[in-house]
Length: 533
Image (cartoon, rainbow, N blue to C red; front, top):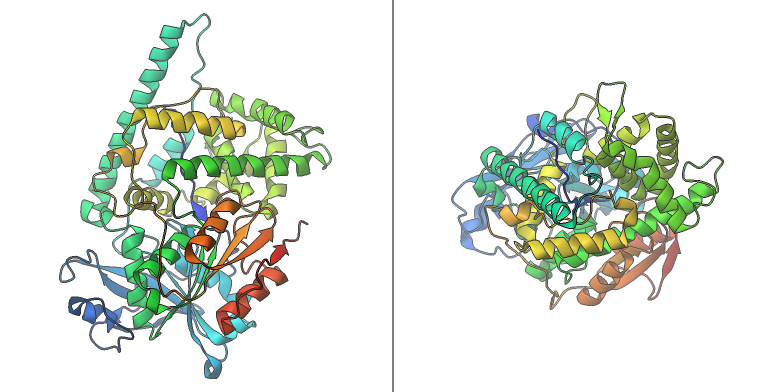
């Protein structure tokens, strides 16, 4: 693959929950028997009755139950091709007091709900949530262990892209303004040509029919089929990050089927993609500055003792990582740490304060010409195994966002977004200037199925929105706006991480648990504080 410099506009919106259990592959699990269940609640159309009435055929997957849920690939053609969604369940510890199912989603888009449910199971086992709910996670269509799978890149292609994505495009001495403009134009044109090739591979490997039907609109309909197949009259749901979009989309489509929704790390439903991207970049800059101030208080901080000054911290960080554009660092496994992966390692660590110490170690290693820890952080972000295999998180992220959002095909819009991003997030500036290159969605082969809008949901019961002040991926104000839009209760959390529910904070976990179990709303104006240690 030839070298290229690409604008990076999207980051996975995942809540990082420690996975305390290993999930057995779902490929050997049971499926579902159509027409043998008892559908609960209204069925949108008679053609869908067989899906709503399916009986789930549970099998054991390690310590959990697992199965597949069958849904139409295209809801406008319910008698056509179907998809199978992987489902995992941890049963309620006190069946005689069981309320129903608590369905969870980690975000992404592209995150595995089965892995999230497995990871949360031990955390809630001896709590009211674990005792009174079946904890249920599902892999959305095209994602994780579901079938068919969104597939755009091979592991080798992903490795090559990470190495060559960012290269030194420094101007030669004495370059004229006209020559600089032509060099930038050629760079952007090269990027777009490679992007078009990537899109073509995605269509060839995934199929246009799958790509046309992986949006949030369709996953929300799948959730209602799942609710019925689980035997629940109404849905109880905990969604993190992008999972908040899935939650409020479900509420719009099926308000009468909602029992309780907790939406943590919210997306602003009325914010267009460009504004969302720029706001997220600014939030990551703020998170980087908080990390740098913490680092400056540690012995021998690689960003310098004056890292509490944002300009000093940003300048010192860029001086440390920009040489990777010209000379990546060789690693023990034969790979090389390039500039893009160093940036990804920082982004990864901003999601979760527990990763600040590993990041500091990684930057200290880089001072000494080593890159092992930074690559470990970057690999975790991309969900790359030690054997070079990737989850399909990044492929799914692109596919879902391209049908969820209205794409711009105007290079001027791309250029303005790039300029604004560099202005609000200078720690991400690679020195190559703004880019007018359009991203993959400008060349996506299927139309979008939704757009940003203000939800107006009549008859929705009270919901809870959790928003954290120092959240880098979904800025605090987005949660404020979503709570207003849904006329829900806002739970404000002081802290620096992405997602706060069920992370061990008594204030947050207590409020969320009382709401989910007893439908008791948190007090109006409640604030919780995360442990800064």
